[in-house]
Structure formats: C-alpha cells, structure tokens
Image (cartoon, rainbow, N blue to C red):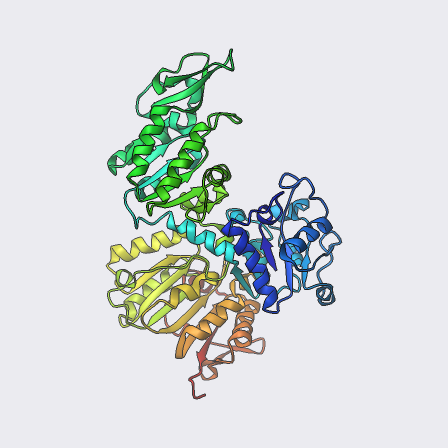
Length: 582
C-alpha cells in the first residue's frame, strides 16, 4: 500500500519539472514493475482540483499519469476489509478519499486495520503529512510486516536533515510569515545553526519591537513579546546577526491606490505595510551575495491577501543568482516554492520543500510521527566513543528500559560488558542519562527512541557484538494487558535474529502469562529458525508451562520489583541463538 501525496499527482497541472513528482511516480512504477500488487490511498479535495470528487475520477487521472490501469475500489465506505480476490481486479487499486472519514485524522486503530487489510508492505510517500498522526501514515504501520519510505518521502527527509547541518558557511535563514510565539523553538534552533537570521514577514515587527524600536501596536503580537526577547538575546549570545526590514512599501488605508516607502520605525497612522522597501532589499542582497548556504522559510507577506509581491519576486531573483555560485539553497513553503518556479529558469539547483508545517515541527525539535512509524525511522548516528569508554566490548540491549534500574544495576555487576537502554519516554531517558553521568558510569548509555523501528539502525552501527537482548514487562502501564505485546513487530525480531551474536541470548519476561507466551511464540515464529528455548534452566511450572523461577541476572527492573513485592508471579524464559553449525 502506497500513501501518496495528492497535491503532487492531482493538481490541475502536474509539474514534471518537480523532482518530488518524478520520485513519487517512480515509487509506484518501481513497485509495480517489481511484481507487487499496489494499493493507493490518499486524501484529496476540490481545492487541489475542482474536478476531483469521486474515486473513479481520481483513478482515471492516476491512470493517465502512471500510464497504467488504476481501478477504484469501494471497501472503506462498506466497512469491508479488502479481500485477496479484490487484488485481481487490476494491478493498481485506489481506495476511497480519506478526507471523507473522521477516523483518518483520529488515527482510529480499527480504521487503520481496515485500510491495511491484505497489505504486507506499507510505503509512505506523503512526507508533508508526516507531522500529523493519521491512520494512513501512522496507524497502518502496526498492521504491516514492513513500513518503508517511498522515493519522494526519502528525498524530502534528506533535504530536511540538510537544514540542520552547518557544512557550509556563512549560513543564513530568511524567515517570513507570522505567529512567532508558536515558532520560537524553531527560531532558536536556526539561531544555533546559522550566522544570520533575516526576518522578512510579519515576524519582523516582533523582532523590531523586541530590539526596542517603535512599532505600530496593531502589528505586535502581545503574547509573543517574551519569545521575541528570548530570541534576540539568544542570537546576541551566539553572535548571530539579526537583520530586519529598514523600510516598507505602505498603502494608505483611506486611499488604497496611494503607495509610499516609509521607514520601519516611522509608519504613520492610517498606513499599512504591504511589501519590503528598496533599502531592505539592498541590505538582504548584500548578505545573500556573501552566503554559501541559505534557507528561506515562510512568505514575504504582511496581509492575509495582498497584490504586492515585488519584494518576493526580487528575493527569489537574488536566490536564483546566488545558487549559480555553488550556494546550497533550501526553499520551504508553497508560496516561496511557487515564486522560485516563476522567477527561475531551472529549479533543479534548489532543495524544495513545499509544505512548511512539517519543516517547522522538525526545526522545533519534534519527532515527526510519520517518520517514526517507519522501519529504521531516523537513521541514528551515534558516537560510540562518547557513549562508552571502550565500544569494542560486547553489548547488552534492554528494550523498554523504563527507569533504568536493570541497566544501572548490571553496569556495576558486569564491567566487561556495555549496556544500552532503548526507551520511548524522553523524560525517563534524560533522568537515566543524568544518573549515568553523576555516577561516573562508563559502560552504560540510554537512547530515546521507538526501538521497534530503530533497533536495526542503532545496533548495526555498534563496533562490538550484541550478546544479549532483554525485553522485560513491556508497557506495564497499559490498561489492557493483552495489548502489551504489540511492540513486538516481526521486523524487530528479524533484526534481532540478524544482529545477535552466535550463542547470544534473548531474555523475556512479563507478569502476564499470555504476554510472555506471545513473546516466546513470536520469537520462535519470526526468528528465522535461529532461536531455541533453553530448557535446562527451567524449574517452575505454571498452568502446564515451564518458566525460569528466578531472574538469572539477579538484577530486577522497576516493574519486576513491583510485581515481586506484591507477591505475584513473573513469567521468564531465555532463548539462545544457534551457532552456524547447528
């Protein structure tokens, strides 16, 4: 199943000069030509194209674009799961418009399961929905054997990550738009990476005001005053230049055809700024000319709708000229991208990210749900020499490390091993890392992550061998015990089977017998025949099943200790990975 971006394929005019369009097309064609039955799913509206309404119309458009037969299939509206026989109707199928279903935005589990019926592999190629938690981008990943990024998605993510690197200097950020208060964290991030922040939109008045200059009160967001002051101070401390417009083209509210250039600190009553003034553009041009890396995010706009776009066009022309000088330029947002397309003879020299929302969330430091749902998610680049004093030692990984009691106890008991806790709760990870540093522990480390999707990426980069994996009492705070096993995806088990050293061990335990049995069965089912239960260590029989009586390591996790204290049983077992000769 491919979650495609409707804005790429279903606009009134398909832009084949766009690399994202070519990559999105290649995703579907590659899957089809590789022999896959492809199910397409997306949300669309008449705002994209007035002709769009029924799935049959969209299927015809996609057939024309792909030059392949695409058949519309009605199963969501009938609440009927896709059946194997339905796949024979065409090589490529299209499900109904997700915009019509509130369950999509609610990430309804049953709806996601319905969407993914008969699906083995989920391919997300709609990067600009990745900041949202949708059934078609996040929920479906739970029900598929593998969840991967499409070519367009992958390229957009790579371009986004480039904005965080400081490989070229000087690096400037040209920032348009408004709502500074909501974007304060992102602006501080840019200030930590860039040599200059250039404000060209409504936010510039917040900055001018924060710098102590007079600004008409109607142009200042009162709730953003502290955030603006913090950004100015942060930039000052980092020695980052802040550039704001010195003059504006302004229109007389009473005589709309009357335009004048007014200084930023001298906008008269009854006059409204509508565009950047000539001095402002000259100052920006001087800075752009000397830059080696630029990001432009947000529109040069001072009204919700304005016919005055001269400043935007001149800014685009500056950037096009500079990109000819080996300057790396990223354009973010539909308005900025559209202007670049109009003012440039070629857009291939630019990195283009047309949806700004996902980029702002990334710059704020937020994990994008649509990315985190994919197998391997964000590629982790870990400096193991910083994490451990000797990264060549054998590694023990605890998935769902919680408060870190097991890891912390084991680091003191086994100095010959390195221990790694993978935990999705960021606050717990921070607490554990603080304890590691305060205790002077050099063989323990914790990472905030969803191990289900990132285990392979993290552990495969470790220099030493993986000798033990432990999963202890997964998700003890779930209200429904039967849900606790759901972190155990087939892709994770296969990654463990591939990365665990010969004769390596897997320690599993839970306070719920059904969960422990499920963990065992999943490992034996998806472990590629490499795991066997270590029978000789069992000395406890409960309900006809044999379990380890004691924790073989003598170190209890926080939840395990809680269970023991209340006198309840723990269900433990040890698996061993066979050697190559067995």
